[in-house]
Image (cartoon, rainbow, N blue to C red):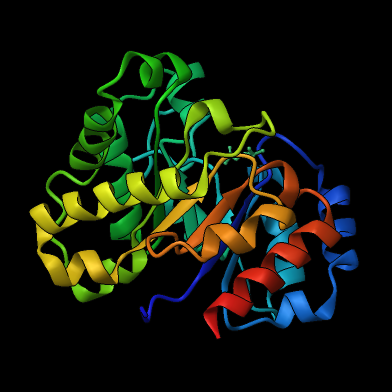
Length: 259
Ligand code: PGA
């Protein structure tokens, strides 16, 4: 139905040393490394990026970071700029993962600066959004999610290239790391609302072109039915991306959908 190329992005969070990252890639089956029917991404800790750049350079798997600072350089102790990431061969970056929002107080205004800095430097941002359990139970949480998208993309002049490069991941916080996936049709409903929001901001063509991901306890056993939903174009996966066999299976199942 759509021409949108599926995306399978692993989010390693604060897992794996350089040695462990190397062991992971060495154990990844060739088919996963060479699969070109899906955009496969590993969002690794900063400390493993250089190792992964070397190990993945002849593969189809792209490198992602989990955070970025919006200033290009300067007295910002502990931060990493978008240019530093592209210099390492990084092509994707997570923006506003719920753990960044919750534990590091990253707000929509800051995340908008980060997203724009990422785009300008040539990185593909993965803008994350989603509600907590309390917000879901209180009702009206959809408005919060749409506001995260509106503020996250504020001031972004959309272009055919940006339509391809900007990814949005809906990750209900209550489904992250809990083993409780969001019901497929419900995840599809929320992503449909996000697509409508994009259409309001940038028009129908952009809304049809952009890739929207679901995240929250995605596993090889859940991904096929998730990918079968019309608005789900890929996954953002934490726990199940940490094992080579499981990540390879996620890539394979996602690619099947892309053929
Ligand atoms: P999970 O994490 O797959 O372990 O639920 C998803 C995420 O936080 O991106």
